[in-house]
Length: 302
Image (cartoon, rainbow, N blue to C red):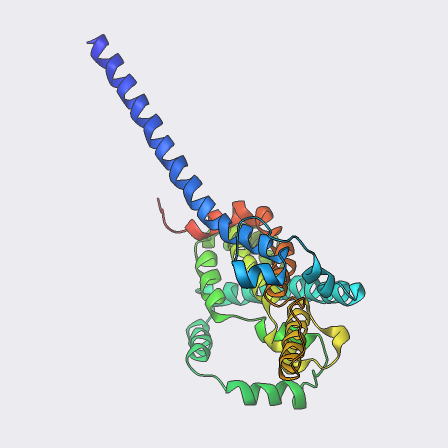
């Protein structure tokens, strides 16, 4: 009997090891597949334009050159200023959006709030119908006077109904007994929200905050609509403008039969992607533990 038990343990241990080996192998393959495009992106950004045009992309740079980065950083202060604008609108926009989203979700999740269903329908209705781009542009320019104002880069993306509905699910999972206990202890609504509710929403806020930060960081469309002052261009729109100017120069040169083989075009696009993607990647490790918890909340209930 003891020998059978021992052999069963050995078999289970061996099968477990095999299972882990297979899992790690699959994860390694998936990781490699995800990393290869980014490696090719970096490699292409350091390759010459002629090498990319005639030999294609590769994992290692061909005819190593930093011409694309030299073009981007030709005026370093412009890039630094664009980085500053992007960092500011990303931090400010994400913080304000999280604040208003969590506060609104807390209100419509409260069962003792009389008009929570009507208010929820109002928010949901805006996901089906909206005023359109023209009306939105007129509202921001003529009524709010946000032309060349950094608020024009923050307000349009500050409130997302989809994130609101997700956050309401997080708030609904909090026991109402905590809110009632706070009331008994004499805490007001704001004290209850900031001292009790908000700390319990860290996982949800980290999950939504990551997507909000990515949205603000990658946004260039609002800058195209509302910004004329180059000093207030975010990084994405600054790089977009540089790309447009480079393409215009190439088109003019081709019409005038001027050789511009050394002018980076494809490598410039890759270098722009590296410059724009690099900083935001550093944010993910700090929110990873909350992100994993946030996307799985509610999947298992006891």
